[in-house]
Image 1 (cartoon, rainbow, N blue to C red):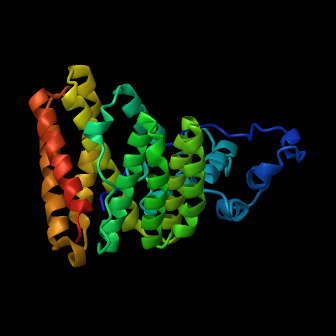
Image 2 (cartoon, rainbow, N blue to C red):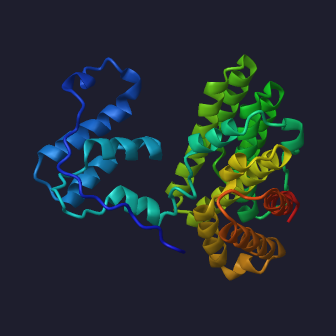
Length: 328
């Protein structure tokens, strides 16, 4: 697997900025966060080793979603950092080791922003039937799940009330196939309820939480490959949607959204690391070839793609997504 560089740290000592009043019990719903913040403050004030500090913080973080406990731990500072002292962040190191990084778990708010930037979106031209893939391998189901999350982005961006319940049901079915149905069950019910109310900001947040909970489950299972495949499936379906929207209403500024050279270079390297047990299957051979073609197109194209290049990109992404959605 191609490693991603960790961010350098030259920060001065970090002091937890939260006041003691935060522990007064007024925010009863955030007991997990308060427990973690308290552990951070104890670690910063004491004289334990860095390893002991991280152990204390990890224990306090039990039960918190991955994104939230990492954010709080970084906010409070797991250990004092002196100026100009290069320190590797243990939390970041663990995420990299497990395959969780900005590419396998992209910032979903940024993906929503891409769709917002391309509005109005021609939903009827961009939608697809939800893939079923009932006899798919687990690896294929991971890519199907990622693609379904991207379908959800389109549904939310276009505010299609009548499809939110179906989306929640299909996401739950796929999550059960991956062995993480319990993580998605409550999200499925919440998506349906919020969609009926037309509370689109809340639907958006619920969809983001769904993906994050599945990511957390993969982390706990130490299933690095599945984390990458979910990310690849979501990116390919998202690329099909955005390139289709640009093709139907082309301008050079809109085409700039599609110039994702870092992402394609990363995924192109990742698909080369498939183990022999799946690498020789026709589906994954097709994915390697298709991702390589997309990489060549983006690496040789200017930052603002031409209409012909957008059409080629859309066709490639659509072909790969159709292969992923088909029965294995």
